[in-house]
Amino acid sequence: MGSSGSSSRRRWSWGSALAGAATTAAATALVLCRPRDPRFELISISLSTFHLRAPAALDIGLTLTVHATNPNVVPVRYGPSTVSILYGGAHLGTARLDAGGQPATSCRLLHLPARLDGVELAHRARSILSDVARRHMELDATVEIAGEAAVLLWSRPFSVRIDSHVTVDPVSLEVVEQENHSEMQLYLA
Image (cartoon, rainbow, N blue to C red; front, side):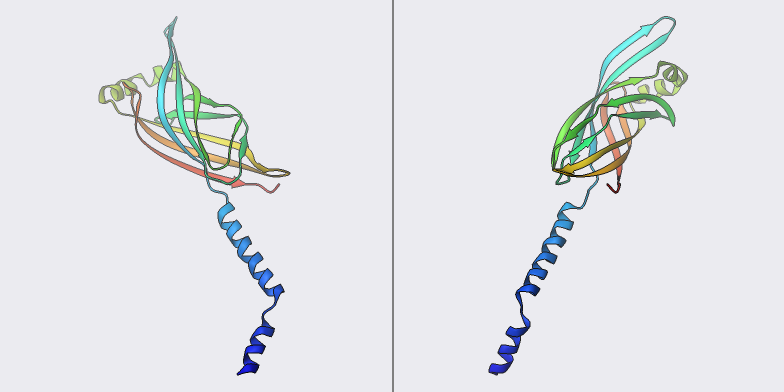
């Protein structure tokens, strides 16, 4: 009985224990640090400008308030991007996302200035007026944001594509419903 106890002790070694601890730590770091897609939610839309210019040109400016979440354990920096706003599949306008950054595991509100194309609005006037009467308008938005996640001397470029389908009340500009999908792609540094 004494010999089997001593053979069990001989099989155990500090090297094996350290290798096991290192493997466990690496697996835990991989699970905790694996990149996750950021989340975006349109919180509100507000009218910032409304001008009727001769001859019958319409200039509409909006401010889109977006709740952005970085669920990752590293901060991110990103370059400027343009959000395309679509109505019935047609390009209706754009919103501007300025270059910036976001700390690790954080949320923040972004205020994006947007412009709607008066010519496109005029071409779609019948549909838009019908949506106003129903108080139900469906819009799509798409954007691709390029940036990098960086910690000290290590950085990893990425891009994220975000597609949104938003239903708004065109009278009150209230966001009624939305569905957002984001897909991130990491690049080798």
